[in-house]
Amino acid sequence: MQYGVVIFPTDQTIQPIELAVAAEERGFESLWFPEHSHIPASRATPWGGRQGAPPLPGEYWRTHDQMIALAAAAAATSQIRLATGITLLAQRDPIWFGKEVASLDTISNGRFVLGIGYGWNKEEMAQHGVVYSQRRALVREKVLAMKRMWADDEWSFAGEHVELEASWSWPKPAQKPHPPIILGAAAGPKTMAQIVEFCDGWMPLGGRHKLGESIELLHDTCRAAGRDPSEIELTYFYAKPEREAIDRLAAQGFTRVIFKLGDPDGGGAMPPGDVIAQLDTFAKLID
Image (cartoon, rainbow, N blue to C red; front, side, top):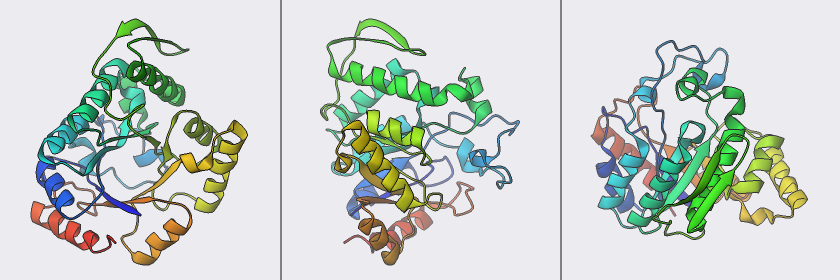
């Protein structure tokens, strides 16, 4: 089992460089940053798209840009993996973002992990010109387009939503053929089909999935597509920092757990010293 931590890197808590150095010193395998470009003040979509959800925590609209924060962390570390948890890929330009991924992977000497998701905030997407019902198709085509960019000296892509003429772009990622792509999304036939088609892993969110049924569906989807289920890495996001819970996940085939750092109420304002104390607590679980 490998152990990682995730935090909303805001302007009111520990800074990314300090956290990255501390996490690496304590033996964590990976550091994950989420993202939201902004949160429209209308707050029309409930948190997570779930009716009856609590008010959205302030950390959602106070985050640093995740790629800039991870690049700063890369410069201050040498071993820890640097990951997006998650990137809202439907809202991203695939040319610019593909270059950012390749650049960060190169600068970090192959330590980047690309965690992606579909997104839930309809009004946030709308301000990026994204139609909510098209977000899955957009994520798929943008991943496929970036894979072409990373693999080929001259590349192009023609899809229903993304069409890119023959072009050149460097650098290429240090990891071959590209950094691991892990999809964080609810389990369902459409999600599993996309994981099997263009991803290297699945990352369910703690407490929201019937894991046994979901893993069985993933494995069945792999076999139907002619893919070995062992090729899909399982990462558990927001894992309980308890030995028994971790052992159960290991028995189900998970090879990485991610613990959530920061204000449990989601305010994003936990003092740096308190974050380090949390980190020390979680580090006791590392084998």
